[in-house]
Length: 317
Ligand SMILES: [Zn+2]
Image 1: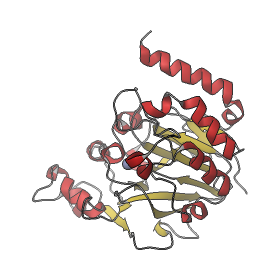
Image 2: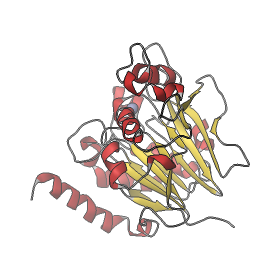
Image 3: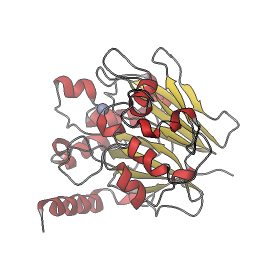
């Protein structure tokens, strides 16, 4: 048995031993009905642990409706999850670190075979001096002059046989969350807000589907107090834990340590916390880190694996 399998087995047994209550919320994806979150990728930026980088799918009544992030490996996991590009209403790209966005053009290429004609809404952050905003990111991929994949440029124009991408940049000057999909009366409404991730413009997403609310924290250091309000009473909060508690320096400016993750989940009164975006440095200290999360948050906590599925059970009629 290779070391990767040993590690996965160890994490699996650890999960069984420490997080049994949370497993009652785990289910099979795609669910025939209702809302479920499927974690397509639980890894970080290093290809050393058999995990895909960040990507999350939301299933609604058996259809893959929302995709958040598309890091390396999302292309393969998207297929393994049996998701369908034609059913996507919305793609959110939290930021333009490669481990959150690099498989997006691969999914677009795949989708070009899907005979989809309906436009697809894509939301991402605005840019800075050092990072592109969503529009520049898309132009660098699909632009007619210098786009690396200009042959897929019909995604920008909606001419030809490809669906048009409707791009929405989330304004970093916003002091309140920005609606990026739907409205108060829509079955699906999605809001976004900037979160602190070092010098990288990054956004979190709050997805409301019927009465269910799912919040994707993205990479962030946990220092923006408004995020607690943004995540308030979520049925499921996904937070990233690539660093251990003793992280310092740039790692701390980029990421929240376990105790901060637990504090946010507690202060926001979320019903369940899912931990993802793990790296070797957080996995090697996983038991202690999860213990620190649970010392601050008494609700169910689960450490996701690729393709983990969480059914939201609290829908109100
Ligand atoms: Zn990042």
